Image (cartoon, rainbow, N blue to C red):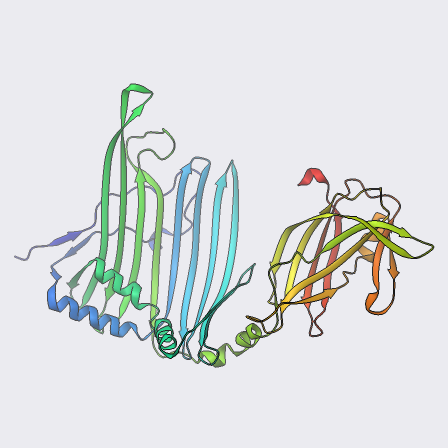
Length: 434
């Protein structure tokens, strides 16, 4: 009779702890599995199978990961997150990664939900000898690395084309391989349980603390050495889920799951698919190092039609969102205005790079159209000077209560290297709202 090899534990603990819950259906949930195998594959045969699986993995064109993460602090402090990440390889040394996440948190009786989508591109440019990481999100992220020589270029291209090999190989290196029917199972598993006795109340009393850590990563492989399923489960359990809160049995205080869907096949042409993205990246880009607004306070003389600066108003960026590489949204609070002056001069400028990822930084300027937005608050627009020296100021008889405004607008870099503005609004923003 064959000896059975059993992996896993039968310990089943609740995930939900008062306040945060997992939205996924139980049928879709990745768990710590219990396996019952006939025999383990070892030695030369194990190495051969690993080689075949890694060779087949070079033909992976995409991997989609479904992830969950749960963290419990106490009754009123917990977090539950769900998300997907789909990574696709393309011919021409391109990668595209699209992620969507939803994070639900409960803190101080308040439950909040945040959703984030990120569209990321990576490519290796042999002509410019650079590799690019270009991410589209609420804040654009660019990272460019120079490639030293042809050997480094070859290595970088191979690393991109074989993006998934390391993760596959790690399961084999750190785990065991089994065969059941026509499938192979590569399993990397860990279980640790620790018992300690903590002082409780005073030196005469102790309570037992139990902490458990589990991890299980499973690759199911078919006869063609291709991955048909790939799951990861890990959790932390404790009978002290919050400070000095001892209970009889351990419960889950943190859990992470991941289910990967692997697709093999011919890759699409990345150069054709992402030509617009590449062109956009190598074009003009707004830089990341300016607030985009300066507000001078001073006096306006009606007779001489001149403005004399006497101070500045402070400004804070309440919100910034990058709508593209050349378009941005701002919510800026300006404050500490006073009745000691009678005019404001608002100047808008942003730094940009003419050729995107490198080169010197230039300055683009523009006049924020605030006339209609400020008139309801008692401001009057006055134009001063002519030609390139012309500018506007906003005069007033009395600064509105609080001396503070929230100015919202979209700003774009035009082909003429100037700034244009849309969706401009102004509302009072009092100092006690900081």
